[in-house]
Length: 210
Image 1 (cartoon, rainbow, N blue to C red):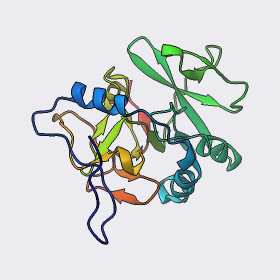
Image 2: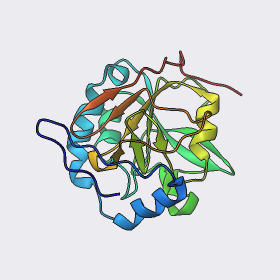
Image 3: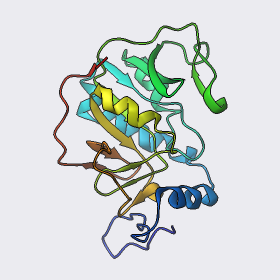
């Protein structure tokens, strides 16, 4: 799982796992690597906030980052300053609810697995979502995302039509990941060094299907 050394003039990308490696094995290897990406928060924010998919969006869903995820500490307050409707995920059973937040210091509370999420008194968002910024333990060069294994985002993506934006560090970008036909790939992947676009047709206006 050690990122390969890039060739001269090539942007660095993490090496992919052996073909027989399972998602669970990759997760264990990534978690064992440890570390935090908070020092990349400003670079990531500048690239995300410059995306046309974000600048044109009125409603953006993002996430409160954990240490092993690409940091959103600069992105979230910037979205609010820019007047976006900011949604964050709240886990309810096996599902994720998009919930609007307007004050990051007031509207968050410890939730699923101790992760900060919108407080229980906030109502779920029922309207459209123009762009969804997705976390992941890793992504690959085809836009495949590796989550934590709970399936919460898989279920959300199955019913949410929106532009999917993966957020990762270069160290989290692998050449390939195991995937299945039902896996929803991202349309855009942002790292601290670049923006990668994939030939995945957008799903159309951001609507939540019941």
